[in-house]
Image (cartoon, rainbow over all chains, first blue to last red; front, top):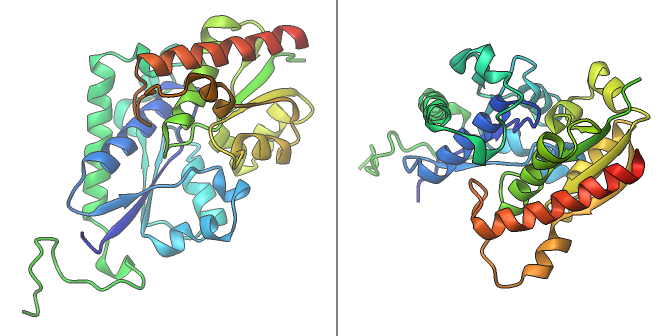
Length: 153
Length: 130
């Protein structure tokens, strides 16, 4: 298993489509990205949980995925947990008209075009994970690229 | 004054029960009780912004949580909401032992059955409150 662990935190906003897209894109990266290990946390645990949850962004280089320009996940993470390594505003990727759709939010109502949006956002998350500096992996040993070959060998 | 009951799920991302909370609430506010209820983004509530506090403070709220951490209930309470009902997804799940509900990403057919039951419970409470 890779020693690289990256935190991905979704807003999962319930009021509009972009929250659903942010949640599904984050899940897609967690389930499918194999190059690095990804972990997540339920955002409201910052207040409902304990010290362990509030240390999340201190332990893992963390990327926030927000549905709209309120950037709730980014701001809450930085307020309660620590500096993040990058953030994604889904509305900038899928456009405000799609992002603020209040009629289609449930998973069962999503159509092909919405799953394409999920793929687009997931690709941006992966790209951002790839841009994280190795120095951000606090307390972890950096072994170069994730090909599995130790550069010192 | 907006008298709609605020229905807030945890939307937990690590287990299927968080998705069940989310989908049950969305079914309620979009399909069952759109005139009497609405949801508010829990992530927005967590920010503590003045604007979102004004949406919650002093209003009747129903929270739906997927795990014993009770994130939705705790955060709505911190924001000043009046929690008239705390719904726990696991209470309904217990009545469906042995079933597969899906994943944190997508619900299976049995998951849809359970969220419909939870949504009915939420709707009943909303109707009692109005």
